[in-house]
Amino acid sequence: MRHAHAIFNAAKLSADVAQLKRDLRLEKAKFRLRNKGEKVNVINSMMEEDDTIVEIEDALTAVEMKVDLIGAVAAGYEDLRNAASREMTRRLGERAAVD
Image (cartoon, rainbow, N blue to C red; front, side, top):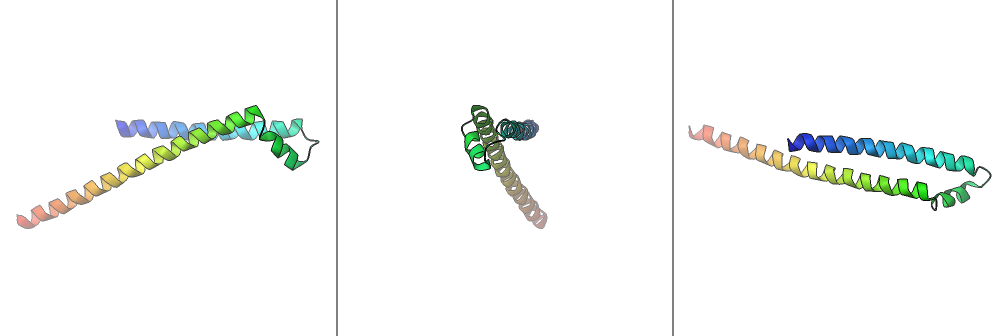
């Protein structure tokens, strides 16, 4: 049950990342349109101070950190599963040799 829950969480977070990246691209495009008379480096500097863009970037960073954390936990569980599988195979091999 936990595995299914983890998969659901990972899928939801991946969807959240995609949505936030889309929102960020749209917001930056709108910002560029509103300030199209400015130079590119000035616009980029202004974007760093725009509250909406900063808020989306912060949310995106937080969700990406959660995705990385879930990936690390999943990799840890996979390592444990693989070790248990090797141990079971080893024990079954020993038992067959004794019989």
